[in-house]
Amino acid sequence: MKALHFLALMLLIAFANSPGLAEDLGGRRVIWDTDKLSEEEFPGNPFNMLVFMYTTQPIMDHLGEYHDHGHIIQLIQDGGNRIQDPPNSDGSPGGDDSLALGNFNSIIMRGLAYPFPLDGKSGQFYSTKYFIPILRDEVYYLRIWEGNDVATAPYYQNSLEYINPTTGDKGGGMVSISPRTIQGPQELDWLFGKSIPRPEKK
Image (cartoon, rainbow, N blue to C red; front, side, top):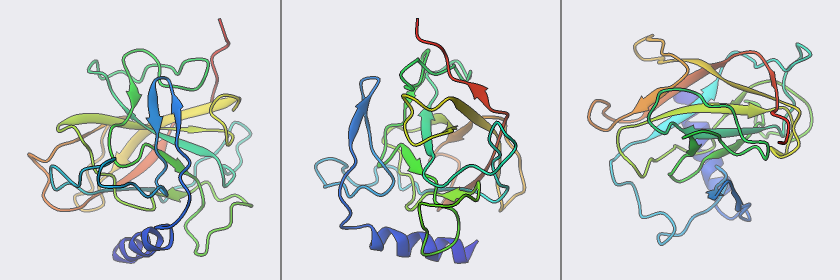
């Protein structure tokens, strides 16, 4: 995974001057993993935590094909009940869940090859920079949408489990990111469950 580390850092540099794609979803700001944030917007790394997120096993859509590049992945923070609540009809996290608080909470699927075109499909992704949480000891999961707009994408999938490449440990659909127990960068290799139709508007 050292090669992926290096690639992630190079991509971070490459996107340092990319335009922001900020928007609001469900009352919380959407921050892409390619956004450049100022010190005022994101005050450094309060817990010395670095979390690199990726998938090595391709994610399949509702047709059994690889997800297209350009599909959206949300990093979601559990509200405390350890349940992956269904999304709201606008694509925002539902129940007591919310978009993560950190230096990003949304990822655009691009595949593992570099340079990565937005056309094509591979069903694989990685975060272009490390996730830095603002709140300590929170629990997270990922949700991928079958489209480039969470408000209209017809299907979604939640993370099924992650694999820690260092220890080989597998977790459930969620992972607790804690500076109390993890030292140094953390890598999370995610798997996903089956596609589910988006909730209908009430």
